[in-house]
Length: 287
Ligand SMILES: [Zn+2]
Image (cartoon, rainbow, N blue to C red; front, top):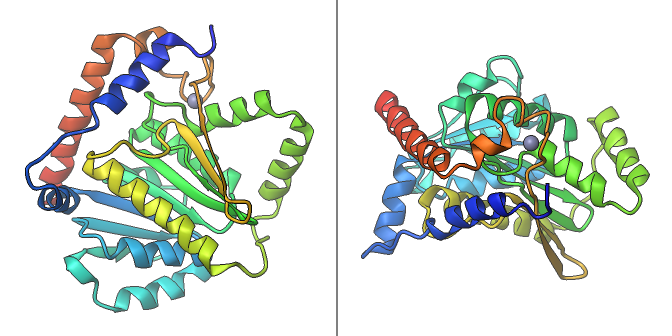
């Protein structure tokens, strides 16, 4: 496979080109699209709470909040007692995140976003597998010291998935052993977190997440991290965007579809048609 694969670039370019959909009354049209949208937020730590606060200010048709761990339950519960502005309908699951049955929850939403104070690679692996199975798009934001990472925003079987991203990372790292060591450490200690947090960094991270959510669900501008990773170091004021080409033999997303089938033009058209039909079904069952 040549790098970058021209077939992938063609599909990726077609998606971004068609993302614009001009409307005479932009704000009203945006609002109307958000009112039809169902968003799932997996909230972890202070960033998760902040994301819940900010996302509730947007007029989603439905916002389901899932606390990541048990300590996240109470702060979110207190937040939801306050009335939401703009009539955003926000609900919260009774318990913390559980893998079993989560596919059903995810399938009833147009987009899932994860907001966390630190990366949780094991959690993201789990969510990636569920998303590829049920076909719901997802994205994530996490903070590593002073660095914010947004994405990848994944459309299952169209863009690179989280497994593709990890494999590309390892292939491009100068010191893959360091990357592996950090990954293993984060997987082994789910309770570790940075002590203290600069408020502006968390607020900026959540601003990125809100922008990504709004762009994805309203389709007026292309998402910032669709099939790519956006990272911003807040102290050095350095931003980088890295496109992720889907891995040819990715065990997660290649298991059900071959690259050749995915890259056919008709295949892309039918995928978009299926997505539209699926959105209509979701609205149909929710009304
Ligand atoms: Zn993949």
